[in-house]
Amino acid sequence: MLRYFETLIIPTARETPGNPPSGIFSFYWFFVRQAKGLFLALLVASFFVAVADAAIPVFMGKLVKVLTATTPARVFADGAGLIFGLIALVLVIKPLVTALQALVLNQAIAPGVTNMVRWQSHWHVVRQNISFFQNDFAGRIGSRVLEIGHTLRGSVVSVISVVWYLAALGIITSAFLAAASVWLVIPVAAWTVAYVAFLALIVPQIRRGSKAIAFARSDMVGRIVDSYTNIMTVKLFARPEEEDAFVRDSVDIHTGRMIEQHRWLSLFGIGLTLLSGFLIAGTTWVAIRLWADGAIGIDIVAMVLPMTLQISGTSARVAQEITTISDQVGTVHEAMETIAKPIGLTDRPAARPLEVSKGAITFDDVSFHYGRKGGIIENLSLDIQPGERIGLVGRSGAGKSTLVNLLLRFYDIEKGRITIDGQDIADATQDSIRRYISVVTQDTSLLHRSLHDNIAYGRRSASREEVIAAATQAHAMEFIGHLSDWHGRTGFDAHVGERGVKLSGGQRQRIAIARVILKDAPILILDEATSALDSEVESAIQQSLEQLMEGRTVIAIAHRLSTIAAMDRLVILDKGQIVEQGTHAELLALGGHYAGLWARQSGGFLEEA
Image (cartoon, rainbow, N blue to C red; front, side):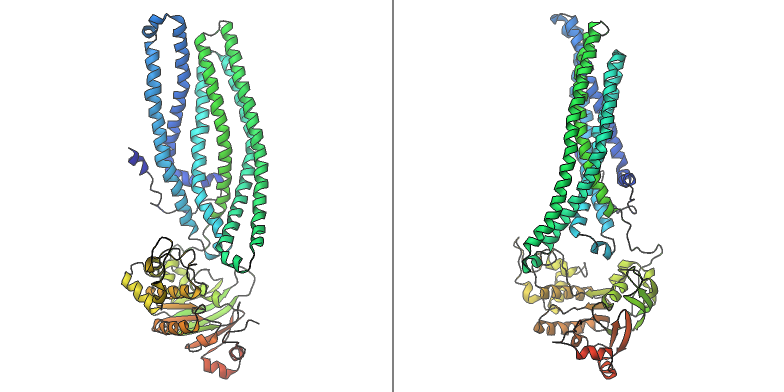
C-alpha cells in the first residue's frame, strides 16, 4: 500500500508545463493543479478526521448520562451501544481516516509534490539566458529553487490539514451544540468573530514581515556563498575583514527584520491565549447556567467542555501554523520573482534543428547593443568560408567575445542576421546551434564531477578509451594519473571540486581542450584557449590545436598576437566595427591599425592602453 501512494507522483516525470505565472495565487495553482487529486483527497480525509474528533465528545457526553442514570450493574447492558460505538470510533474509524490522511500527505504529497516543484523550477531556471545568471548570485538562485518545493507544499498542506480542519471542526461542533441549545452556540460564534478579526489584524503584518525576512535571508545566503565561491581571491588579497563587513550588513538587516517580526508573533501568542480563555470560560459558564436552569442535561455539559478544549487547542495550533504559512508564503513570493521570470531567449515556434555540413558563417549587417542605445556591434558584416581559420583582434571591449556570443545565440541580435551554411540561426533551435560549435574559453570552469564525466561532457556516448585518447591528445595524461580526491577516487574517476578548483588553470584548460576534441564539431571557437598554459605546454597544445583545426571553420580570439598570426585571415575590430582584415603579412605591410598593435606588444601581449 505504501508503494502505491509513493508512486502516484514521479517528480522528474515531466518538464515545466509552460512559464510559471507571476501572480502569487496563480503561481500556487500552477503547481497544485498537477496534483489536485491528491490535495482533494487530503481535503476529504481532513474533513472526516474533524468529524471523528467532534464525535468523540458527543459519545462521552451520552456515556456520562448513562453512567449517572443507571446502576453499575446495568451500565454495560444499558450503555453497550455507546461503549462499543466509542470503541469503534477511536479504534477503527478514526485510525482509518487518519491513515488515509497520513498516506496521502507523507507518502505522496511530501516527497512527490516537494521535489516536483523543485524539479520543474530548476528545469525552467536552467533554460534562462546567460544574462539571467550574470545578474544574480548563483547561491541565491540555488537557494530559491531548493526552498520553493518545501515552502509551497508546506503552506498548501497546512491550509488543508490545519486551517481547513479547524473550520470543519468548528462547523461540526456548532451543529452539535445548536442541536442541544442555541445558547451554546453564542459564545462559540462570538469567539469565532473575535478570532477571525484578530487574525485579519495580525496576519498581514506577519506576512509582510515574512516576505521581508525571506528577501533578507536570500541576500544573506547569496553573499555568504559569493565569499565561499571566491575564497581564493579573498585569501590572496587578505580581505577577510571586508568579507566580514559584506556579510555582516546582510546579517544585521536579517536580524532587524526578524526582531520586528517576532514582536508581532509575541502579540499574536498573547492575544490567542486570551481569546482561548474567553472561549473556555464563556462556553463553560453558559453550559452550567443552562444545566442549572434545567434546559440541558448533564450529558450536554460533559460534551461541551471537551469540545471547547478541542477547539481551543486546535485554534492555538492553527495560529502557529498561520505564522508558518505566512513565512512560507513570503518565501514562495520571494522565490517566485526568480522562478516565474519568463525565459529571456526562446526558440521560435517553428524553429528547426540546424544542419551543418560545411561550416560557412555569415554576419550580415549585424548590430547589437545589449539593450542600450548604441555601441558594442554596429552594422558589422563578415563572411567566413568553410574550413577558414579567422583570428579576431582588438582591444578589450572591441566586440570580439560579443560577436562569438551572438554566433552561439546567447543573445538575439537587434538588427541583421547570422547564418551558418545559409541557415538563419534565429530560425534554428539553440541546442542544435551549440551542438555544431565547440568552444574553448579563457576562463575554463569544470563541473564538480569526475574527470571522465568532464571530458565526456563533449560526447556522452564516448567510451573510456575515447576519453583517454582525447586526454592524451590534449596532453592531460601527465597529471591525470596523479590525481585523487577525498573519497579515494583516482585518475579519471577523481572529482575535480567546485568549478575545478583542485586543478591548476593550465590543467583545467587541457581538460577543456580534451572535451572539445571529443565533441568533434565542425566549427571551433578558441577564446584565449592557451592563455593559462606555460610556454612548454602551450607549444605541445598548439600542435594538438593545429590537428584539431584541420578541416574545421575556426574563430580564434587572442590578445597575444603571435598565437593567431598564422591564421588564414585576421579580422581587426574596433568599437564594434571591422577596421581591417587580411593575413598577418598583408596587415603589417598596410601599416595601419594592426601594424600599430603589433608594434606596441609587450612580451607578446596586446597592451590595453
